[in-house]
Amino acid sequence: MSTMNTVGRPTAPNQVQTKPATLTGGRGLLQNEPLIFEGEGWGKTGVDLPEPKTDASDLGDLVRKDPIGLPGLSEPEAMRHYVRLSQKNHAIDLAIYPLGSCTMKHNPRLNEKMARLAGFSDIHPLQPMSTVQGALELMDTLAHWLKTLTGMPAVALSPKAGAHGELCGLMAIRAAHEASGQHEKRRKVLVPTSAHGTNPATAAFVGYTVVEVAQTEDGRVDVADLASKLGDDVAAIMVTNPNTCGLFERDILEISRLTHEAGAYFYCDGANFNAIVGRVRPGDLGVDAMHINLHKTFSTPHGGGGPGAGPVVLSQALAPFAPAPWVVHDDSGYALIEREEGDAAQAFGRLCAFQGQMGMYVRALSYMMSHGADGLRQVAEDAVLNANYIKARLSDLMSAAFPDGPCMHEALFDDEWLKGTDVTTLDFAKAMIDEGFHPMTMYFPLVVHGAMLIEPTETESKAELDRFIEAMRLLAQAAKAGDVDRFKGAPFHAPLRRLDETRAARSPVLRWTAPARSNQAA
Image: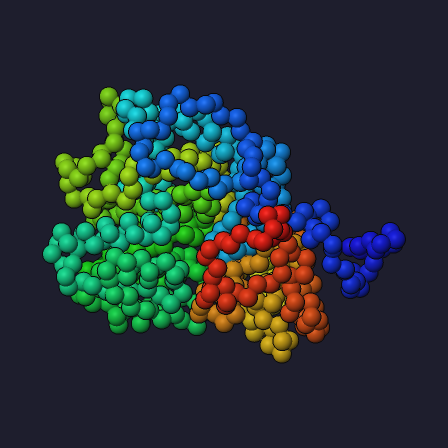
């Protein structure tokens, strides 16, 4: 594809033009937008409020005497401010988000429509249960399908994220060991080298000592190393399957057998459940606890501007220790078990004040019901197909970290192919921004040098995958051809240039200082 030069004639794609800096800080259709505190709206408000009917005399010396110090915006100013800011961000509604491990994928608008129904969006967690029967039924239905899809007998819905789910699972495991009198002896958790960083962090947070388990040359758990470290001092293992290298742990049944033989529990990080949903039930693999990222497998927003949801399914052995609350029902309707008594006497407590994130429950169940069993199976098949398509199309130019055999949900490359080019993984990622693409996950997993982890998800079409692949191929060819300047200075076309990330991490500016002039640009 050619571009147009200043007199309207096409410019060859490999012809580099010098672009003068603009005088305003804007770039074409991208406006230069200052911080909201740097505007001129200090003496106005865009909202008319009625005069208060009472004074503040009952506040005593707590009455504010100075201006509140917040800028005021009219409605069009507020709209333009946030639209301009949105143009500076990449978004899943703009293009593919190839982040491996995180899975940013399309959020169906049907889900959003359901979540905005008044019966779900306007309820309050302190309402009488008789007034929220529909919401409780939805939670119960979601729990049923999560248990069905995983082959597990119990689920805790309340965790607000994947890491929160890990905390839930390990606390249930700890409670089980305490109940059997083994907690003081079992103080270790085994974690593979390729695990998500939250795994060892969560284990340490719960009070366990983390012991690393080696990885084989083909990217899987070293079963011999695991067996050598299992003993009566181990509380649990934490294994991601499919793992963070994008591979299925083919020895998963042996891993489960050895773990249970040692009296430990098997925690599975279910972040990558979208690669096997509808095809494999973790309960059949011997898993005792597994969190499910609803955003990753069931299309809820990633974070969603607030808490997400990371339900945890539990085995029969751990089910009695699940945290409150949970939904029960009989002929009289639905209710919540909210206290550690009766059937919940062994529950380890609560993870949050109420019942979890209702909006995410609605979205996830909408996704399940709109797909059905066959559709969810296709989710896994398409996620794996798309990842293998990317791996196959790029492997002649880029070095696959584990070239033998297919991958699962994500394709992992290392930086071996960049040797001798003076281009690093970071340089390559920054150049992707200039081409209009969000970079893939970089330098993770740590077991792969210069890792480039790409996860297309099942929601990307072949046309979008081809567009992404073509950009990657052109950049790879440019790196190998010695076009180093394209990479070292990138990104050239983003709203902001490359930051000093080391300095930003070590010396962050945490306090905003008012500029010398109120209308100074950001």
